[in-house]
Length: 96
Image (tube, rainbow, N blue to C red; front, side, top):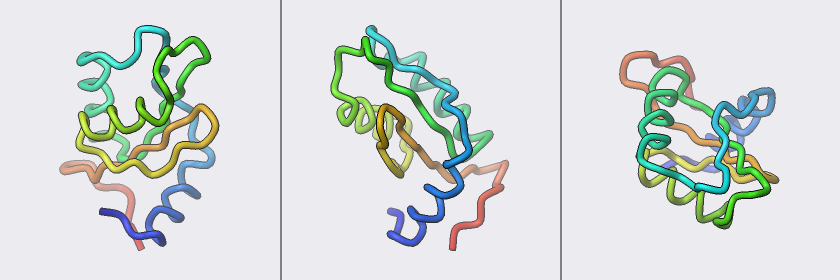
């Protein structure tokens, strides 16, 4: 579980990131979760964009992705979801 200070730090880090995944009208599927897990292992911090045509609520999508990928939900801002998961092999981010 992340502390408030750690979440603030990660939000600042994520500010310049571009979303690397988009959730569309089909919602979240198993293949997308696998790809998100792999991206989190490489980068530790990613953004996921929820498109306008997505039938699901963005908060529901964020909760689904974070629990499925065993990641920490840092923030939902606008249509973007920020996720963090500490990498096993590619540790890059040092949390305060």
